[in-house]
Image 1 (cartoon, rainbow, N blue to C red):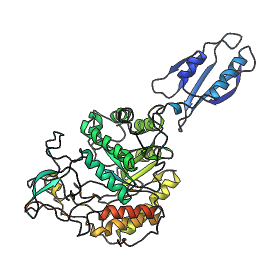
Image 2 (cartoon, rainbow, N blue to C red):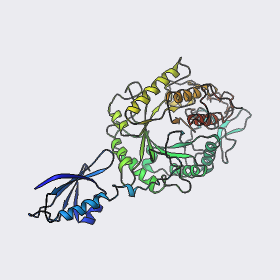
Image 3 (tube, rainbow, N blue to C red):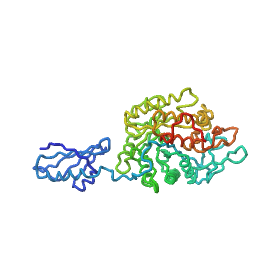
Length: 495
């Protein structure tokens, strides 16, 4: 009775059911949708049985068995025309503003932004502070606080006997100043770190900092995006479903993809870019196979209301070969192939103290880029100015205390070696770790050469370079990345 199977692109089946008087039955796994018409279309009065399946690009197809002839042929033709001209499923429902000053990551230098620093008296009711005291401190470099509107006394003293002061990330004026620096020096923007526990609990202080950051990004026309950091996710009892709910909250309540004022949320491939960091690292308590990562990625890409996003995954440096700092599980490659960009984590993976380590960075970058091209995925290298974990390691790793400045900055030489190497290798975008992290001394914001003095605790300096040295170098990197000036292999010098 039936032949000539047709295939058409359909929209929301529930909308069609109301219009065409169809009865829909959705299976619990959402692997398919059966739709039955209650309109008799053959001599026996039997309904046509239809079925659709979503393809990997998020489209839905409806297969319809058409009768060769019969009184309902005309009715079915009308239905087909209606379905063909109904908008694709969900496109008209996305809550994201499609307009942005940053439609692609390509050509941009973005940094990570922790925003987790608190200070006694800042109104957050925090009970511990990263700067600590002489007995226990969690930072290895000290910020230059000369331009901050608000600063707070600490237990530390400077060489002249005055109390050393610190800022609070919670102050709106702090965030405003940081984004002002980004604009002044040409740093394109930042990814705001959204840690798992803050997302799960809807931490009010963290949300306040996000609000301030998005307002400042709009004010200074800097790119901004959300980076979910899986740090804090437990081995069992919780999963990425908490992040799905948090993304709904960020979109609905904080309007992260629809800012007031100038729209600067970073997009990629024409879609809002959401990053997920911490996938494939062997030292994590969670198993990436059973925390709902695939479901979260699918939600971000395909949900009819909150989806339509591009996804960037933060992975280990050895993600391609699945060894060294990476878990040996090919499932990581499956997740990567579902994403749009990958960000390999390079902090502590390269050092200026190792002979020809930039050759290794070059070779790895070129091999990574080739793999990504072959699989139609974009690639962003991670660069960092140096690393120091001395003070934190004294109580986190008492049997393995790290030396101060274990990966030295060398006045910016190491930072620039990475920049010139990856751009020469073919990189079209960069990620800087980090904008403000003084814990591991990777910050590029303004820091001091005159930190507090102590017999028990040490802090790195900037090798007598100006406090804004790394902001300036990052701006130079952005201009050279976009070919606005020739790439310099040697570290640029200010005139």
